[in-house]
Amino acid sequence: MSLNELYREVILDHYRAPRHHDHLDSPDGSAEGKNPLCGDEVTVEIKVAGDTIVDIAAIGVGCSISQASASMMTEAVAGKSREEVAELVRKFKVMMSIEDSAEPVVDPDRPGASLGDLEALQGVRKFPVRIKCADLPWITLTQALEQ
Ligand code: ZN
Image (cartoon, rainbow, N blue to C red; front, side, top):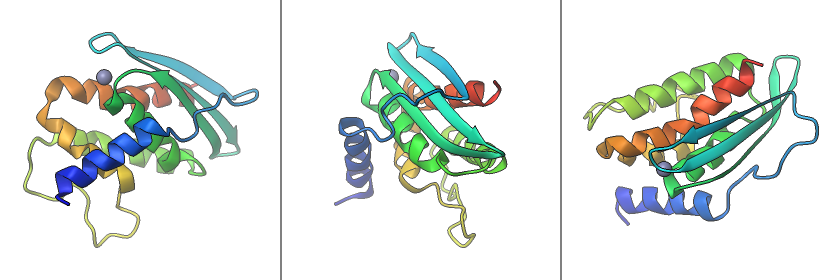
């Protein structure tokens, strides 16, 4: 299986069986995001205790890229501190903004540098119009965190 095929499988798996896809009881923050170019919609809800995002939900409709990105994001963010989430958002933006770079986006020798399943979204960079789909849940998360 090529890397591209592997990435496609990961994206389709999250699209078909999205994680953290049920509304939270009394969330501490929530935001709705829309990508009119593609018709994607996502609602992000978070539950915060102290400095930690203890629970998160992302519920939406739209293309496989937007919904898979939302599902992967929930897995990556749950249980992390605000600071760790900010770092994750930064890394994701860097990854999505480097076009066909030969350089590795994340340093595999640095512990905790891996974006895990999210790295499957790197292929989307070849289709600039779809980058907005991948970014949508992350922009919405940032809005939910600001509440
Ligand atoms: Zn889309």
